[in-house]
Image 1: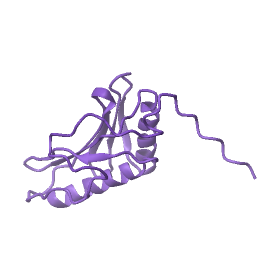
Image 2: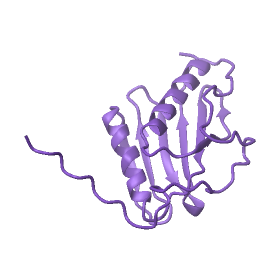
Image 3: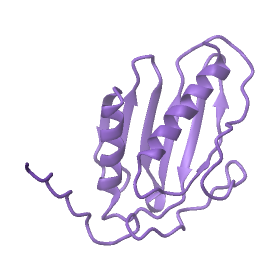
Length: 160
């Protein structure tokens, strides 16, 4: 695998991760970097995720990552800036961190692979394409994710 192929796999992991969030949140590509043999892709959520819903948001992501076969390598349960750290079986390292004003940040770093040129991500954000490094703090309202009441636990499945 070369760096471009690894970047494409990273983008696919991020696409699937954000696709698992229902209702969807608005996100944008953030700055990405390439090193001597790794690539780091970043996405930033611009939907307001209220303090009352952050645990639910982290839970959705953690459950999706576990279901996808990724290993949860750490959890930071800090009240203001919680995070979840993960590793894929093929060495991709990624995390979700809740930062300033509840903004969600996804970072994914590839394992060391064969050196190659790396193109910009091709996935279109589901909101404005902000200039890299110029993403505003969360400002998009969601009836669910921005609500200030705790999320209700899911209803039990009906029994047959």
